[in-house]
Length: 307
Image 1 (cartoon, rainbow, N blue to C red):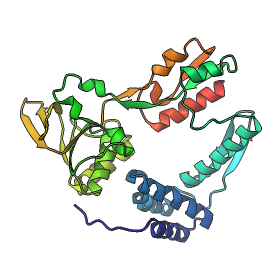
Image 2 (image 1 turned 180 degrees about the horizontal axis):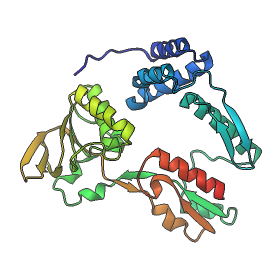
Image 3 (image 1 turned 180 degrees about the vertical axis):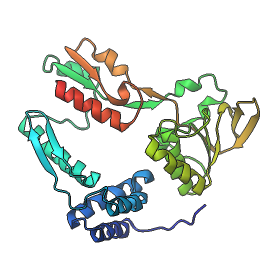
Image 4 (image 1 turned 135 degrees about the vertical axis):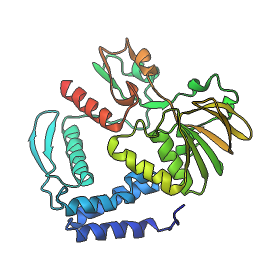
């Protein structure tokens, strides 16, 4: 395992900002990118954090990213706008686009409610006030998929561990080598845990976009995370996880914690609850089918334009 170097987040931000400034990014833009990368590292999403700095430097050097981008709104309609990012840093272009979207929402009187659970009771309280409802309730780990597994009550939900609601031990077996299992496994390994990933398919990263697959493969190898592919969970015991490979060979993986990181299941319960409470009911993102954030963004945009 590579040597771990601990750096205060303020110093890391300073380093990122100064590197980008030397690559001709304006200081405010360099600082904004630093904010995003450090925040990702602090959240445990290292794939979107400071590890991407060499890639950005390479792309700026090769001309693929314009450090002095002129970000402009090309045209605007009542509910949409087209922004030309001029091949600038995505963090900067995205932030400016979001600022434009917020300004438009305020002008159009779009109300935003926070810390409010969307359920049947809430919908009844606003009955007849709205014509359209879009459900973007995301997805969860389908724990029911393990109903036939002996000792399933010992399984931890990967999202509970990721959000800090449950604590993983020092020896961890993760069931599922998709994006959730990989990110969680890498994070736990960097925190000092021994991690083993078990995947049904022949390869890990089945739901990871092609440009990220090689990164996870590299990180798994560098971090010394053991991987068992073409294998499934048979039993969870006090000692760990008993798995079976494609040839029927059983292996007991010793572990303090066995974590389910897949499959994912769309949160679609609200569709049934809201069906007769609004004239138009739509869904987008993982609420329709678990995929990635790109699909959710595109579907949200198309629904917004249509409505």
